[in-house]
Image (cartoon, rainbow, N blue to C red):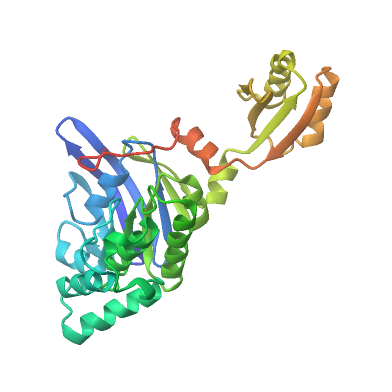
Length: 323
């Protein structure tokens, strides 16, 4: 194992009695990168973050964070990391400035240093204008940005973000995304768990797909999409043509067509890079199937996720003992 990675784990295991939350998870997050950790509900995402943040001990395997072993030197790991969980940790009865000064003092800063760090973070996250308002009156997006700022008081080398935009509207999510991109540009390494595949697609340099406590796949978003091929979809003129269109696409691709009777579409994954859209349309036409629209496109990350794990993205994950 090497310190050139911000986070590195080999064969990470965690058991809760008979429940095997992690079954040999491997992770490798380069320094300065954003890594998206994806998986269905119960896959092991939150358990992995809790181990890496030294909040729970692994049953087996080994993990390094910022070059420090999470079991042998947890204090050094804690000095090197910031953690932002699924729920905001800020105090709604304090102002934004008071919250950050409190976190700064808890981190060991005193007096002027605490005040300056709080002001610096308020400016960095665009919160200076509301700094002296009680945080409980802020919008959800502003409170999440304040929570993110609190996790950065100590200028951590590695930041763990556990579903940081859950429950936020699109505008607030975009604000958090902008902040995360800025942190990565400045050299902070980020491990991000998320239920939003669009979020991982837009933010992550690399993605690790976790399923049943193991690493199911790794790669950039583009690499993972390329791994499962393209996606062909045809819209037919009537419901009576769906079965015939499905048979044609099955014969062309050897895949398993998916029918949508409401939209009158048939879709199928295409693994053959030589199969073109004109060839698909000609085959449907030769079979006497009237097509009103057809497309051949790269798969979405949602389709990659479904193919690799057999599950749709989770919407919630238990906070305690999450598998």
